Length: 129
Image (cartoon, rainbow, N blue to C red; front, side, top):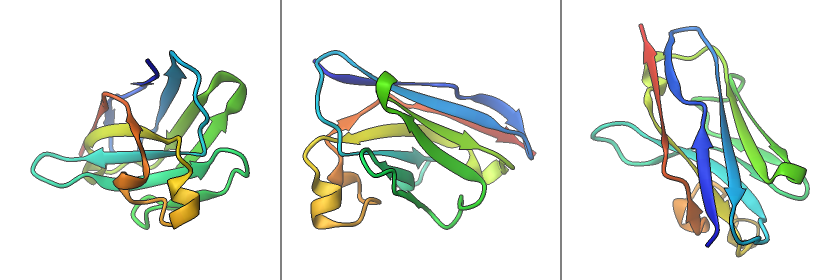
């Protein structure tokens, strides 16, 4: 059974930084894209960032562009989210997701949760003001 495991969340002051990691383990599967999403209390899950596994193309939500950076270590089957200049509105549970069907590239729009078929359990990020 393939699974994604996030780590690196925590409590940080506004203006600080955190780096989230998401490691794929278990049954080996082909990954075409990886994404990060977040969900704050009472809000819907929203897209944060995504990366195509082979070409390294990256995509960001406008609210995090120039503050967050998504990257991969293909040898470790791990995707990272470097978060700088954090704001209280970044507080949420952060989820990583994997697209093993190539839906994001084929149908377009890396920001739709439906493009991804494997999800991690989430890691809490809290930014205090």
